Image 1: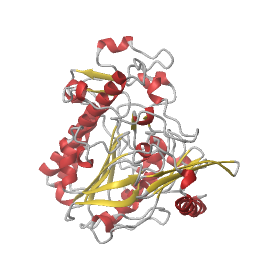
Image 2: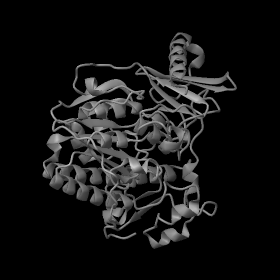
Image 3: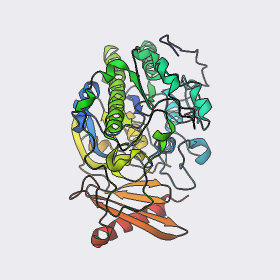
Image 4: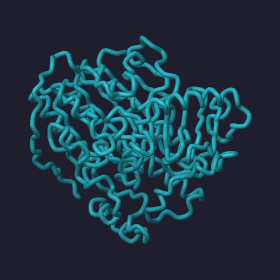
Length: 469
């Protein structure tokens, strides 16, 4: 990969037969991979995100938004179909296929296309490039092959290390390169820089043709490896980066809760419990977040320059959260707050900016975008439109978010987080964190909060009875 644009000719798929009325809004849907709410607009001044912060200033920012499963492929399959995961039957794995797990469900891309929109996919939108590939108006555009692939050798065919010394730091078990890298290269030397250029070119083409559009943009970073141009690393002084102050396993945490081992599949990791590693890993994550912030800024600036911002709803999310050393966890893959809470920011032309405290789930995104665009929502959707929260006509739409991972089900509200694990129909473990007293989730108080726990258990039972296929 180099700094040249790599834009292949895109074969046009069959066009839809319906037409769109003029009042329908365009949709620009931006997804960052593994992005937790570690952004200036979410009260994290240590991370430099001026472009996303500027976007948030004119938008509805959701402080209690949750993915419905903390792994990329399943989370995307869920939110792009509007269905909750239902483990183990549907949307379980990192490489989940929506068209295989829910073959009769219309994904959001096809729904908008059938309602008169030109639907485009740039970068990592569905985890698998060929998942619902024919639901888009043009072949989905991506520089790399399927997801990350199950074969690490396939992974290394596209993930090129831009510093010469990186080639000597491979993980001998997986063949993957180092977990982070800073190369003195332009943004366009990286996949995400190319995604930005492709998206800007598409916006220019759409502005010229006047086609109503649903444009989905999926950035790879800040997903591992933490590779970003040197200039984004230089925005931070590593010696001044603070590490988590709760680097210990929570009291009475069930054994079912573990950290992700994903970072260990990369090279040059070292001792993950050392101060040096914590600072280096946070430095790399922050650099990647700032890199993505710059890409978002360029796209939004072009949207405005073209005059498309006046008729385009913009949504920005991370597909789930990510631990940055809290409890010595790195990554997602559990039912702790840092793995499940994610940024959700929505700007709809004409709506006043506001901070939304109500619970929101990613399964709500599909119906929200339908409502914003003024098109009907398909009957299969299991979420609700967040539009009443965005326009301020409602303060709350739902009491709980429901998240699943392996045999565990998590129920979260604005007061706390409860999870239970079941095997062979028997409850094997529970945890409850009172976020009013313990926002960092340092102490499982399941044994001393029976009244609260009963309420969560009932909510969980009702939820599971509704979503089981």
